[in-house]
Image (cartoon, rainbow, N blue to C red; front, side, top):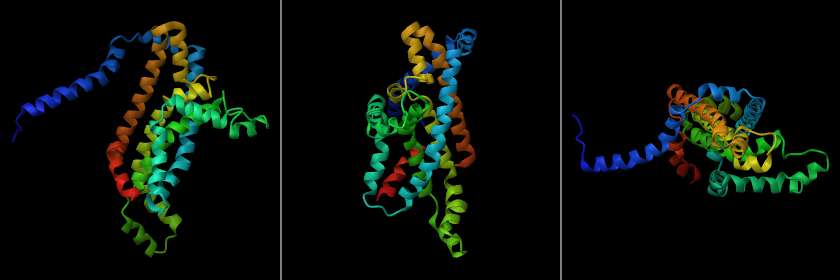
Length: 275
């Protein structure tokens, strides 16, 4: 039986459609006015190639770190009876809502030449700003929460009876984590890692403060916009959009292959985790 289009549905559809247009039109306009040959030539220039290489290298490093450290943290927050658990979960969400520039200032205060950690390392000729390490630190700050939260959601969704069954067979806690919990939580973790990769790749504000040089792709786009205007920034913007689209496609593919992986729709599960 077909559902009739009610006036309420029509009004809600129009209102939602206006927001959808605001999200879709800029992307569609990018492709409608694409200068493929000119943009490809611009992206082949040394400055663009260096920025692409820097962003990809920093993103690979930061995503590896946040996965190795964030997944165990997500497991602990999902399963351990920690005091003030809601507080710790809230602190993990905080970098997701703090403005990027403010995050960069906080990082600089900590890791800069005169910061608490940076000053000590600077005395040993170790610098964490204006180099690849600074970009990685900025990306970790803004993107690691996606991995942690997705891991919490994934581990919280694992049937504990399966873990208990493995325990009755003599498996250790590590074996249960490796052979039962982690494989079952993997789809959610993979989706979070993908979202973190997108966020890290597009990180601008904190990176601008922590590591203006070497240029990451977003910083290089800003430099080109300042020097050459909109036309100069378009090739880099196009490159970032394509990289993000590839990551989104990967996330959707993971969703099809692995079942429930939507981090946004899974955030309601955190209420149960934090209790």
